[in-house]
Image (tube, rainbow, N blue to C red; front, side, top):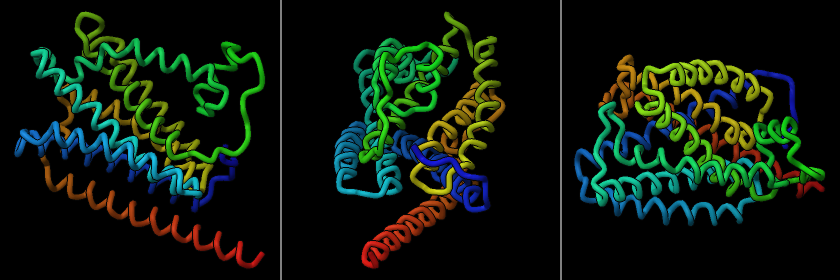
Length: 290
């Protein structure tokens, strides 16, 4: 696990850039799906297949990267591609099965995703008993529920890429299922106490996670921990949209706002890549000196 450090201007910089990059990636993913659906829906399933293949290849390529920063950066993009393919597979299933839009506006693919809840719980149950999983939330559950019979695996992790990809998929999956269960009128409903509780909890936890992020001053851990931080905030964005209090610019194609988001994503990508290259160069030079 990354070492805890005192909050500094450097850690604030890394936290801000990581949050902008993850948020921008999610927003650009949404607008890409909307643009394909509006302009050329015939290619959407081939696009989904391409995302699946690209995600697999990207995750495989992380085995050749030694830096945890590069592994996290590339691993997130691999997980992002795999998640895209999962959404498109559900869209395809929805069309094949004739799943319709719910009266509260939920898309067919998300209505199907709601019923993957038990599969999600099965995967999560395995992770709670897997000694090598270092997730802080799972650590908390292990301590409180006394799940481990022995010592949890420790030591350096060399394959951050696949782990980061899987983290992106699991966190995104978890919160989509949570929202779909909340929106389901036969269970809770968009204006139920459950949905309000999710909104409040997400808003509160976001600031706590930002505070925790400020303890790291490298893009490796910052990017990894920015995934749940941004995704939890995204819950509030989705809920506000469901309540009609917010129009998502990536859904309604608000180009002025999306241009700012895309520019932020481009700048943050540049800063991340520049820093990772600098660290790699410094590491090589230090080895040469030794």
